[in-house]
Image 1: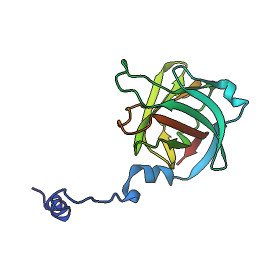
Image 2: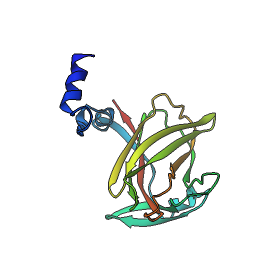
Image 3: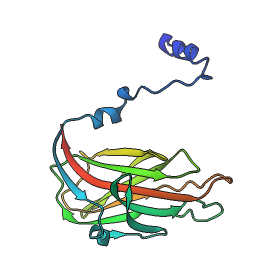
Length: 193
């Protein structure tokens, strides 16, 4: 056994003690702190932009203020026990074949109002006319604002026609309520170093 690993095991009382994450050691910390050279807002929540948003499955969408920010709100239900196949609830933001080739990151702020759980995974897709949708998944923590970033260096993005955002519905504990409100702020493309 390597000495470093053995020291970690001993420090944690052989994994019976929580070790706090050092955020500054993570990739997301490095991504967030990159210098932004250029940015373009590709979606700004408003009654006008709501016309470009589709709800292909179940739920309800609207424009709503959250903590003094105008957001796109997806209201859905996470109480999916005994429902087969597993339901999906997400939104499609239609974009008019934007050429985003000079940008290499997508960034957005989201807020998850989910009283019965700590977090869920959210799937993000970028649709380009000539290729299959590209996917990114992040863990989103409940009852707080989350900054989501997606480095898209290797993603074809010369004719982007849609952004799809889908909270992954795991179901809720029996004692929990199924309400899931997902708030989305501006979606921004950035060119970073």
